[in-house]
Amino acid sequence: MQLLLPHHDGSPLHVSTQHPALGEWVTIRLRVPAEHAPLSAVKVRENPDHEPRWSDARHIGKVAGWHWWQARIQVTNHHHPYRWLLIHDRGDDSGLGGNAPKVEWLNQSGLHEIETLDSEDFVLLPTAGAPTWLHDRVIYQVFPDRFARSHAADEHLTPEWAVETRWDDPVDPVLPARSQQFYGGDLDGIREHLDHIQSLGVTMLYLTPFFPARSNHRYDACGFDDVDELLGGRDALIRLVDEAHARGLTVIGDLTLNHCGDAHEWFQRALASSEAPESDFFFFTDDDRTQYVSWMNTPTLPKFNWNSAELRRRFFDGKDSVVARWLAAPYNLDGWRVDVANMTGRLGAEDLNSEVRQLMWQSMQEVGPDKVLLAEITNDATSDLQGDAWHGAMTYPPFTRPMWGWLTEPGDTTHPAADGSLDPEAWFFGQPIGGIPAYSARDVAEMTVRFTAGIPWRIRLGTMNALDTHDTARFRTHAPAENVALAVALSITLPGVPVI
Image (cartoon, rainbow, N blue to C red; front, top):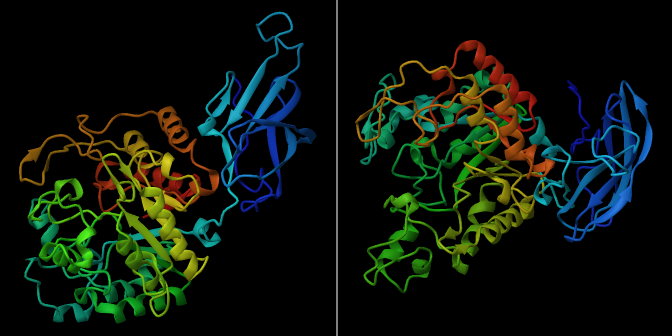
């Protein structure tokens, strides 16, 4: 059985530049194992304007059992796809008879003997990419309420919305405690534990939301102009980011563009008057303005209407906009992870998602090119990760779910559901399939290829290889220690950014 196959990817070994300009000539290289059937020619098929054009590759030598072929292509489109065509010698045993040529096609989904999908071609992106520092990061996700309390946290009274909780009390997964248990972790608590974080090999902090809210997760923001005083306020954020930067760590925040909390000042003004400037920020569905569209029918999370020019202005326009303010001095965040990015700007037949993400990207570029923009896209992210805005994504099909199906060994999986009932089946990313599926290593490889084949290489490098997140159960709960070590190793070595 032949183990080695022709190979090409977007790395510097195979592509001369990761950031070509429009009109620039780029050198691309293909390696073919020596034991592969002899080739009479190799060609490149480009498809920048959805009209294929062809160029010849030349054989440039053999090194360590690999034949290398090279071609030059000129980048003429902001999304410039290409694939390789391998033409075999006529004398090989193709099994086809006569003079029928035997050909193979190579794109991001692999090697094919029949024509394959344009959507899975390799892609060159002559657009500004992620800052180079992203690709050598190890991300540590911090849920501030649950990480660490500073001494100052003892001075904070339990807010009226919260269920008071001692630090050593167990987490209660039943509503309302599920989202209202208040442990009182704060930003200075994180800062005081940076030695521990660095000892793990971490180089980047991802903070879940720090805006004032009425929940422990803070995805129901009451405003975007301040840092929750329960976390230490603006000064605590400045202290944390300054100290992190002094240690060589980068820090990103978490912003929700899909919705806010029902206590948000914008929503309260919209409720109060149809004449308010904020009245078109949301989707009201009755004349009395008591019914509105919300995230997953959760009334505390009213959905934004991105048709509103004023909403766009407040989020994206100028140095005082929501997006730009926290990236500039004195806060100096290094970027954003955008919550529910897959649903943002989408409702029924309306899809403004690409407009919104591009506006956010432009707003960040105005602050500086060294800021990173990551999206939460929990399922197939291919259509949104094409290089027009997001530098990568928190997405589960290419890595997280395959790892769970392959490397977990659940025992007793009975657990309390949000309504207090006992669920005997293991949780698996909200999928009602009866527990955690059993995947083989081959299944994992096929899923990884399937869910990354349509994503340009440069964007794949920014995609987050998370074993678990604040939205999931814990991988370690269901996996033996030796499997955890293997899973962590794969998160580090596969293309993408490892996440703890």
